[in-house]
Amino acid sequence: MGFTEKQEALVNASYEAFKQNLPGNSVLFYSFILEKAPAAKGMFSFLKDSDGVPQNNPSLQAHAEKVFGLVRDSAAQLRATGVVVLADASLGSVHVQKGVLDPHFVVVKEALLKTLKEAAGATWSDEVSNAWEVAYDGLSAAIKKAMS
Image 1: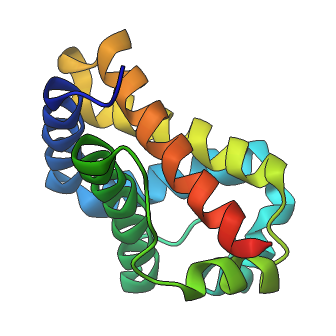
Image 2: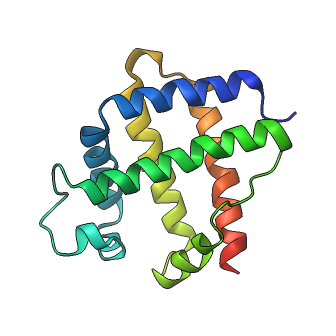
């Protein structure tokens, strides 16, 4: 069974909840990443020279919004065509350049889901989580393909 209209709607609704507090949710997202993989700090230009995760950092917020937005867009692509195609072909080379490996994708996925769970609050469910997981897996597969 393909990605459903309902799954896409669940992703879109929780994405909007995420964006309602972009500054706070961005900090939360990167805090979750660094909690799980402290060495990943050097992969992000906006984290490299900071102690912890900087508050109100426009670059951090823009990157978080891009990551979550790409996953949301992946949900739309999965619903429409059943496959995720990267609009930005450079994503593969950027990830290679930063030294991203398979375990990093797992860490980001966990951080993304934890952040969304916080943002969505009472509307979070296994169904919402599953929709995001499928969309994220589609995006990460496309990025990994572009990395090879």
